[in-house]
Length: 82
Image (cartoon, rainbow, N blue to C red; front, side, top):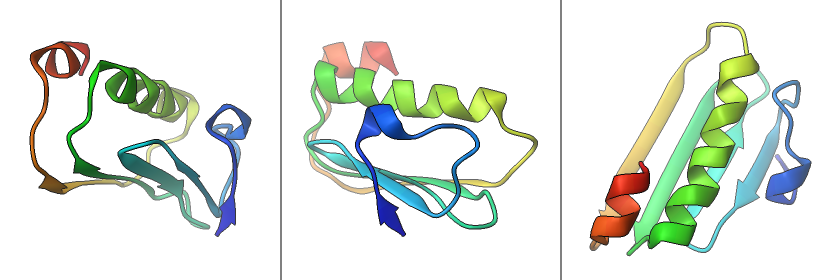
């Protein structure tokens, strides 16, 4: 996986990972997308993650994984964004 800044990831990319403060978002070499969250995402974290998810609207049908097993809390403002 190649690490990229969030604003440098496109829907056409494969084999990339981008990090936020409380999440990792990746697109594997086959187009599978995954979001992994930890700690306590706030509103800014949620907005950044939603921006990553918007990339998937431009992708052909694909698998997507979501793991929030390490999340300890979510603020009401963050929940409202998602």
